[in-house]
Image (cartoon, rainbow, N blue to C red; front, side, top):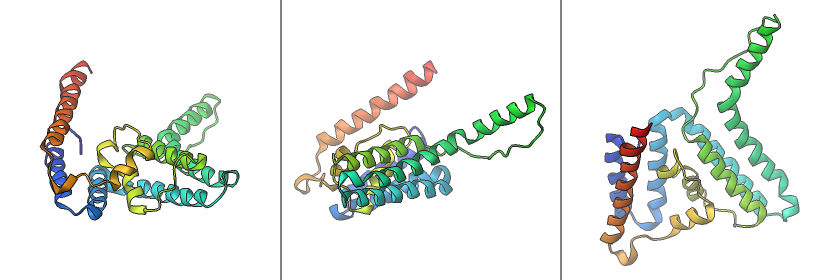
Length: 214
């Protein structure tokens, strides 16, 4: 689902309306479901990857929070190896395979190097480095480990910045999921107007300027 598609222009207003109609304590459920649906609309099977990355870093963060910094490194390494391993596999497995194949062919060594029919998961770079930034911040003691699995999963998969960034620090984004944005049970028109203005300006820069230059 592209941001400039008809489907997204139906999806976004629906999610926003449901968000303000949902009690504050359940809004993370709505946003997480919407984010997973948004990602699954591209390729449902790859939801497994983002969920796996979420679970690994959630567990690593909790384990690091229980220990002194000098004993946190093994759990940081688990986070680094698992996340970067997935990223490098999907991005570079076929590149290395074709390079090895070309090298063998050039020296008349005939062997079939296995190739993988892989489609690069959309947004994998963004959510990989976002979860890694969280793990590194917990390791350094810059932030506390997030104990709410649902909100942490939302932090990893939040759909407005999932496929194109920006990469958000947990100290910036997680507190926003805990905040009640309907101040005094009152809808604020000015905030909605400012948000829609930013969205419209972004669409103009993407569709009118960037796409034309490309």
